[in-house]
Amino acid sequence: MLVVAFTLSLSLSDHAECQDIHFSQIDINPILFNPAYSGFFDGSGRFGLVYRNQWASVSKAFQTVAATAEMSITRRRYYRDGLNLGIILYSDRAGTLHYGTTAGNLILSYYKALGSSNNNFISLALEASMGQAGFNTADIEMEDPSDKLENTSANFISLGGGAAWFYQPNDELYLKLGLSARNINKPDISYLELRDAFIERKFSLYARMEYRAWSNVSLMPLAACMLQNNYREILLGGDVKYYLSEVSHQTLIASAGLHYRWRDAALVELALEYNAFIFALTYDANLSKLTPASKSIGSFELGIVYRLIKNKKVNRKAMPCPII
Image (cartoon, rainbow, N blue to C red; front, side, top):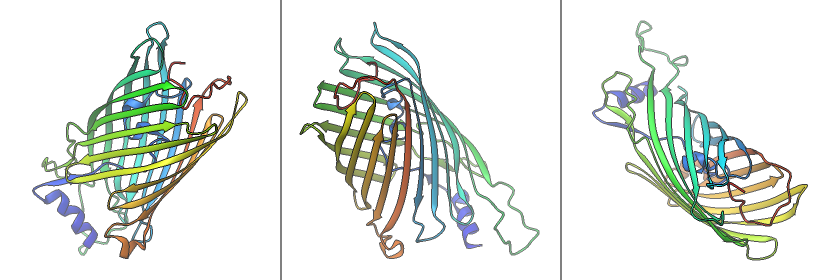
């Protein structure tokens, strides 16, 4: 009953706000962080799956799963531009009532080379999402069995967009910058149709560099920031990437990273790229005020990505350009 009372208080309050789903793996499946990265990959398609289990030591774990698909619509080599279509399907559930969100996002992105060298690109994207937020009443025991909760879900439509820039001046260095805005229409998710509960606008900033410091080793500093009303997330850190094999018939790259989410968690990430596949494991060690309850156990995140790429000779580039 306490959980039910808390849930209903969100709908009955004068002002209620909600946040979006959250993932720690930014680079493994980048369109989850910024829709403009749809199309920034080597090949004709990219497919991903990610699962996150958070705060299992505190209560019923927050469980989030997302599937992504990206396909090239057209690539015009003469004009050095292209269109790309992206899809995100996700479901987020937490607590005894399985409160969460299920939604699907559709992304249309356009990228264009800023010059004739195919090493400097800008990408722009529009995103539309349709989803449903709600909870399951199967495990609820009402004080009066005749009482019923008439509305347990709310449908919503969310709009967003993003911009990204990619620059690779030589084979040893690349830079990526990104900016995105989601929920710009502040979707209403009031269960009582009072338009008093909505999803806040979210703004994300991202900067990544890769520098091939040695023949087979790259250093990759990272900085990212997410703003959603009163919530602030700042992520700083870096990765080390080791190129085990770059021959035409076999690509094998291993990487390890250590990141710090300001006043919240320390992140350790391990990734392995084998030909068209990328596998990643991330662990968040909780460092926030929830530590006494969580015992520093934050979340585990598993990700896998598959790319439709041709078997071709690798030119030892830190990141292949989207068109080449």
